[in-house]
Each structure stands twice: as C-alpha cells, then as structure tokens.
Image (cartoon, rainbow, N blue to C red):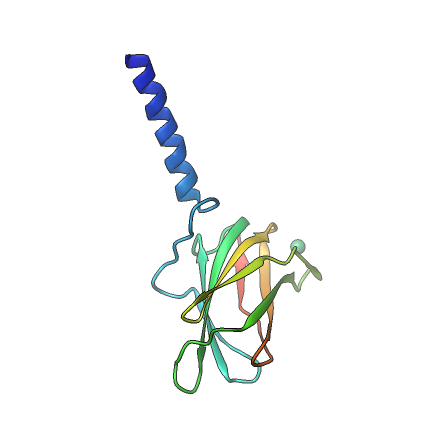
Length: 140
Ligand SMILES: [Cu+2]
C-alpha cells in the first residue's frame, strides 16, 4: 500500500514538471512585454512576449500582440509568417507555427532558437494588410 502511494507521488511529480516546461501545456507569458516593435509601414505595433522570458536557447514559445498604432485597438485576421534568422551567421531556423488567439494575440510555437547569439524574427504580415516587422533578441 505504501509502495503504491509512492509510485503515484512520483507520477504526479513528473506530470507537474512537464507542465512547467511549457512544451506540453499552454504557455504563460509575463504581463510586461519583452520588446515592442513597429511595423515597416508604421501602422502596427507588435508586442513580443516569450516563454521563457527572457528567451532561452532551445525550442521556446512566443506571443505577438498586434495593435493599431493609431488607436491601440487589437488587430485580428492577420497571417503572420515568422522566419527566425541569425543575421551575423546568415542562416535561419525552421519557421514556427503561428496560431491566432483573438484580441490581437498570435501564439508562436515550436520556435527553435538553437544557437547562442542575435536572432531576428523576420515576420511578414499578410491578409487584410501587408506589412513587415522584425522583433529581435539575444540568446545566451
Ligand atoms: Cu547561428
């Protein structure tokens, strides 16, 4: 009976570890943005949050919050194509998956920043409007 209880306790501990890694459950993002960028046209403002934040080497998740520069209203219905890029080394990484979540939020998953250094998220905006934005960060 005691042995069975111990097995259950270990199983619960493993399940919790998986949750907090962010790889299997919904990512949680801090209240404060990691960075704020403006699209090339100047029409949109893009807040970047990452999980973990600050971003760490490996496969991470990110959230873009897109709002109109003019009035701060959220912009839904966009298609965001994110190309991770290391400008200093002239190479990229596999494009992550982008899932619209409403209220101007776009969830970026399977973002594989696999090398230390400076990374750009070269992002093409299409749909109701065409634009471009390049949030960036450094990976230790
Ligand atoms: Cu590199």
